[in-house]
Structure formats: C-alpha cells, structure tokens
Image (cartoon, rainbow, N blue to C red; front, side, top):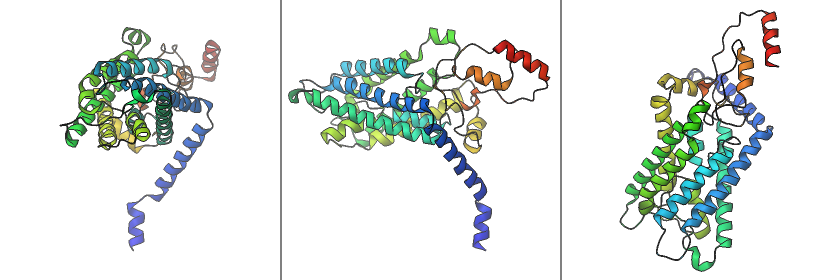
Amino acid sequence: MCRNRWKKAVNFAEVKRRITEFAMRTRDDLRDLRFWRGVLAEFTGSVFLILVGCGSWTGRGDGPDTVRVALAFGFMYAILIYCLRRTSGAHLNPVVTIATAVTCKISAARAAIYVTSQTFGALFGASFLYAVTPEPFRGTLGCTTPQDGVSEGQGFGVEFFCTLILIFVTFACFEEHDQEEERRCPGHLIVGLAVASLSFYAVPLTGGSFNPARSFAPAIIRGIWTKHWIYWFGTVLGGIIGGTLYEVIFSRKATLSRLVTCLTTTRFGKQQESKPPGPAGPPPPDGVNVAQRRVLKSGDSAVMASVDSMPDIEDSSSSEEDNEKTSIKIA
C-alpha cells in the first residue's frame, strides 16, 4: 500500500524522462567542439583574472591598496568579458554561472563543467603568481579575509549584497539588445565599472571577493582559511537572488510565470547551448519561417539570452512554393 502511495506521489516516468533528457543534453555538449572552446575560455580567463587581480595585492606594505585592487579587477573583468564573450559568455565567476543555470539560461551539466574549469583556472593562476613573485612581495597573495572588527555576519552581509548587485548589473547588461544599443552602452565596460565601484567599498572590509574561485585559489596556495565560508555562501546566495530578481521583476520579459515555466517544463537548459554567445544581430527578413529564423539567429544571440528569446512556434500555413521562394532568398 505504501508502495502505491509512493507511485502516486512521485511520477517515476517523468523523473526517468528528465534524467534521459539531461543525459542527452550532456552528451551533445561533450561532442560539441564549441562547448570545449568555451570551457577553455573560462579556464584561460580565470588564469588571467587571478594573475592580474590578485597580483595587485602583492608588494611591500601592511595591506592591499584599495584603489589599485579595485582598478585591477575592474579593468580585467571588462577586458576579458570583451575578449571572451562570444566564445563562452565570459562568466569568469562560478556565481555568474550558477545564477545563469538557476534562471535556465544554460543547463546544469554545462554549469558544473564551467565552474570546475573556472576553479582550476583560478588555482593555476594563483600558483603561477606565487612562482613568479619574489618572497618579500608575496604577502597573502590576495587572500580575502574579513578585517579586524568585521564579524562573520557583517562579512557575510557585505559579500552577499555586493554580489547581488554585481549579478543584477551583469544580467541587465547582457540582456538581448540591438546593435545600436550595444554600441551606446557596452556591457563589458558597465560590468567592469560595477566591479571596481563595489571593490572600493568592500576591499577594506572583506577583501571584496564576489567570486568564490577568486578567494579559494589563493587560500589553497597560502593556507589562509579565516572565515572562508562567507566567500562561498554569501556570494552564491547573493548571486542567485540577484539574477532571479532581475529576471522576474526587471527584465524586459519579466513575469513570474516565465520562471515557473522555465523550472517546470522540458525546455530547461535547451536554449542556445550549442552555439557561442554574442551580441544581438539585425532582425530576420520578412517572410522567414521559424526554423529559418532560428538558423539566422544562431550566431547572433545575446550573451545572456534567455528561454523566451527564441520566437514561439507558430503554425505555418504557407504553401511549399512560398517556402521554396523564401529558401532561395536566404541562399
């Protein structure tokens, strides 16, 4: 009798179907060369970010120079996002990847591999920085710890709210825009300015992490784990809330049902995973059917394109002759 109740409470057929779809999406990713280029881009970008960002902490002195650290991280984020945004989306931060997965912009499998790549890239960057920096200049190698007088709760709050703001800004900057709007307001510069401005506030208090891989890598090399948990729980929780807040309330397509649909339907993780992200392109020509429109957009999607960025499937009533003419025009 209990067994029958379990069968009624849990739809095992639905669970099996979702597991099968997850396995198929993962298999498709693993076979896609563009996906592995994206993984390599995340690794390389994390190496450069840690090498330059944490390198700004090194030198003689009692502590980090807040201005130097803020500008180093802000500039590097802006530069790397510009260089890698069409290859992987230039997440460069496990929190960005997790928030992107929670809001159904990428699959869980892709997110897990991206986070692994970012973490190992940060470790490689910190190891290389340690090797090339003379001992008198190493200091803490950029380890983030709450300063004297900052409690764990206060440190958690600083990292939580700063990361929430950063992910909110990131989602806003990389929502799908037209080319003219992208030229007027480059997203990579806005994100870089956000990182720098938040660092001006947070570096004197907690070190200004906003990125668990950035805190984890130097902690491994130097063995400094003081209140390290706040740089994981605070940043990840803040990032998830920041991304969800933007998607549900402030996005151009924001609706509560949109997020619910994303989490409860089979469209989860199916969107735009097999192509590198990039800036939005011009609208498709009139008369192009849905399948052709998707082909035309395949190389011109936004960096943070959402589930609803693809047009809804419509019934086509055009004749075969019209379709042939349309195909000739596209060719």
